[in-house]
Length: 300
Ligand SMILES: [Zn+2]
Image (cartoon, rainbow, N blue to C red; front, side, top):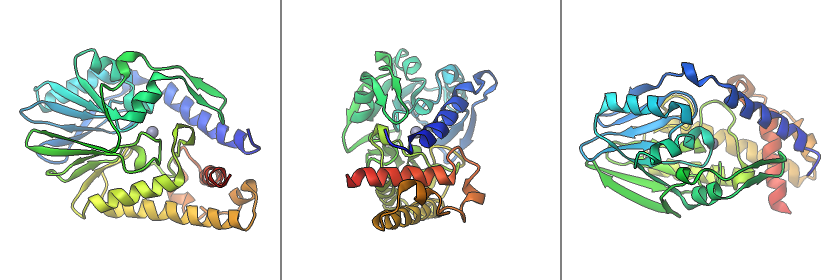
């Protein structure tokens, strides 16, 4: 454990406890129609994508377990056809919390190999000194893959793609090619500075590689469903990518000069972004610290 750990730990614990304390009883699931067949559902936790059609519904992410019935009801109001597949964009509980509930109803869960591997085993986060037990086997994805797979249903071609390990090592994006809609999972979020889960295999360089890969898949008409926040465009994603890359480059340059991580966090690298992004759960200084620790760790 290094000297910077307590700061990282502090903001992570705050963020996690905020999620845990959210009162699920009052949460409403609100669908937003993006195309004839594709919807985004908001509630609490990560945004849900939904593809409707005669062959059965496909859900992308499932928020928290107490919301499963409400998610199902919301899906039914859009299309009474049964849910056939549930895709997990990555392992985090605000995107996979309902897995057990959906799988017990016979719905097939798909995800990257690393999501299943991590759910099966105890997860130890050294920096946070926190251990997460394995998930119930009913939560584990049934169909997994390494780099890419496709589903062809409802007159749609859906690509599930692992571009790079950025937010975690099991990140995938879900591309509804005909509808021109892409769900990014937490590879792209709109609450401000993103969280890079290094203990789950994420990295800042992977984060940027992943965003470059997404930019190459989409065009100016693409509707982008972010992991959190409102529907976005390619231009929004490009701005997000450029800001993170600029921070990464400045942190890397400071490390190259031999600066200590804690001194880099005090340089004010994010001060022009704090008004716009500083309201999120990751503060600018914490993000710089996270990036600096990650880059220094990769140098070792
Ligand atoms: Zn996440």
